[in-house]
Image (tube, rainbow, N blue to C red; front, side, top):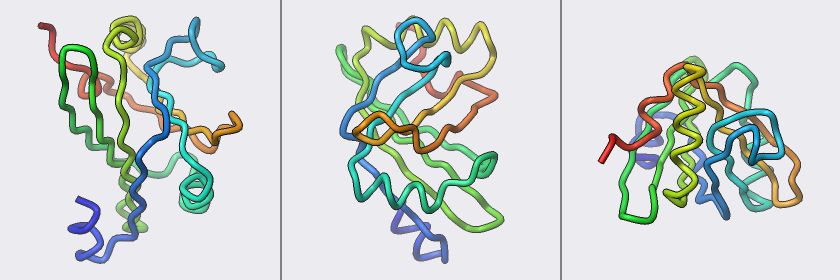
Length: 137
């Protein structure tokens, strides 16, 4: 996906999260519910360079899963600047249910991106949490 976007003139950044978790206000270091990604040094620096609060107005979510894990690729796009950030992570399905409940109740959720030292690098807000979660079994 990143290669295709780049071929079409987009600036892209692809990140494989070092750690990812589905969180709620009760289980996270923030008061938010959603997905939390920890990304390594160079990727965090590159992300910080590209991230614009309230930018990236378009989000695409791609999911796959097993009995124990949810695999997610989230593509954050900022069409005016033709910039895309792709973040991949794996989530323990045991954490996903509470996060899903909180997000669907609130009608919104967040993607928080952190450095390894715990510093938040950026947050995306999503008005439609449904694409981030698997359908009921």
